[in-house]
Image: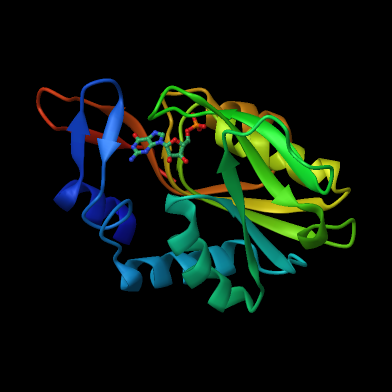
Length: 193
Ligand code: 5GP
C-alpha cells in the first residue's frame, strides 16, 4: 500500500451510496504533509511535462492544488461554482453535475487566467463519474489551452469516470484507486498499480 492508501484505510469511512468520507485529512481537516507527499509523487509521474499552470475546482481541490503547485513552481487557478445563468462574456463556463450534492452548477473561469499558451495540470480530490473533470477539460479546451495531465487523489474505480477520461487519451494519475468498498463491513479494496 502507498502512503495515501494507508491513510484511507486508517481514517476513511465508507458510507452508503458509494461515498468515501475522508474529511479528517482531505475534505475538511487537511493533512498538509500528506498533500506535500502527493505533490512529490505527481511531480515524479509528470516529469518531463511542460506544465505552467494548475487548474482545479472549488472547494476541496484548492488546498491540494496549492501544496502541489509548490512542487511545480506554477500558479493555481480554481474554477468557481456559480448558480448564475447570466454570466458575462469574459468567462469560460461549463456545466457540472455534483456527485455528492446531486445538483448542477455552472463552473466558471475568467478568460484572463487561461489562454492558448497554457499547459495545464488538472488536480482534484476525487474522481467518480468524471463530471467535474469533463467540465474542467471543456474549459481548458474553450481557452485553446492544453491538458498535459490529470492528478486525482482518490479514484473510485468502480464508477465510470476513470475509464472515460483514460479513453479520451489523457494521462490520468490517480494516487489511490478504490475498486471496491463495503459500507457494511468498512472494507476497502485498492487496485494494484
Ligand atoms: P465526479 O464529477 O467525478 O462524479 O465526482 C467528483 C467530485 O465529487 C469530486 O470533486 C468530489 O468533490 C466529489 N466526490 C465524488 N465522490 C466522492 C466520495 O466518495 N467522497 C467524497 N468526499 N467526495 C466525492
